[in-house]
Length: 322
Image (cartoon, rainbow, N blue to C red; front, top):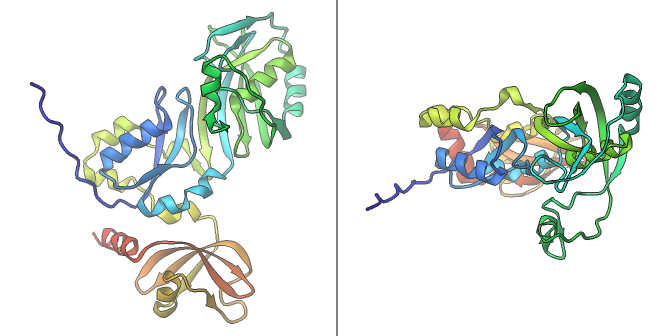
């Protein structure tokens, strides 16, 4: 007879875990595993990484989930290997090979030309094997039935592209690329488009996200490392929710203004009291020192955007005092 599963008692957890997502797990599977290890009652991730991809996946817990959109919108940096001469159904190594073509010499001059061609603003057609919706269904659902539907091109930006010839036994030739790009960029599609520009076709053999919104892979922890820690050690790996808005200016309020702000009320200041007009600022209370949420400043008025609840503020103060 199978032993009953131990029921996990959930608890309020507030913060950001920088996870090094493993190969083969979906972003949601990785999130659920981390959520279980932390016994967290509320969690969300900050943008999907394919099961084939590894690397930086910021996971938000509790109050931090209110600021996850900032990471969703952030620029990202990827490292990838393009396998030349082979096209697959999915644009990556998980798909079946559907076409093979000879590969020309990959010269420094060709790489320089490709770098210039694929740097800057680009209109990119999303791949069929993606989670984008069409008439309420994910594109990959159509693709699995062998159907192709029309997709609108999306405007993305490749800020930086480094390319170098590398070795890979899975293909006659390969290129390693490092790409800094805007949100919504599909590296699989970029790889396929580079393969078409060369004239031989290509698919992605390796993909790793090495940076997103200022968080890098060397700050991350793996699931086995997280599992090996006790609960206090796991909690110590959490960054505070305000780490998601740490690049923005901050405003500190006295106790009276902090209470009113936390109730959702705008605060009118004297000229320059809150600083310059800003689309986003992080807001703190001074007595006690506590993160309250985000706001924007217009004409000396501090206007709440995303607020922590009083219970969340109290939870975080209690954690800080331990």
